[in-house]
Length: 157
Ligand SMILES: [Fe+2]
Image (cartoon, rainbow, N blue to C red; front, side):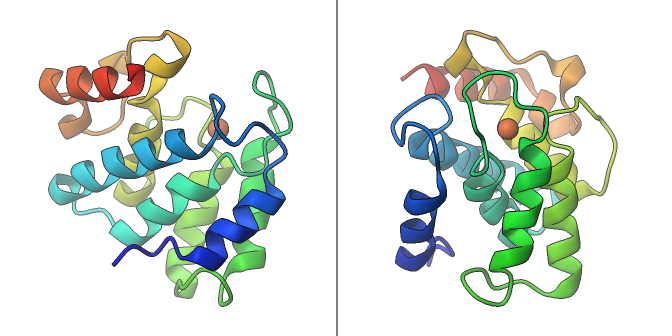
């Protein structure tokens, strides 16, 4: 069963300041989740953290463009939700906070779970007209040409 509960979605709807159906909205989060769970099967990432990352990492965005603080805001949201709407251990929360905080800074190295989160997000760049560049991905499985192309095609739908 998905960890993305009705109450978490209700919170997200209230918290998210942008277009629910826009570039950074719910269908994008669902694709990041899809990418992340595919990657996690191979990377061994913590799938719970990956799933929560997908639905939280852009929740604190205040615009669709340049918003350098939104990762930090997402980490704060994760902290606020821990033990309530999201079910994480202290170690999982640390991974989720790290993944959220630094997800849009182009980093390539971190814990495998964090790198899986970042790749899941970057594989969806087609939605803004960017073909994911393997050199900007962290994990070998994400760099696989088939993975890149399939994620790119999903992002365009
Ligand atoms: Fe983001």
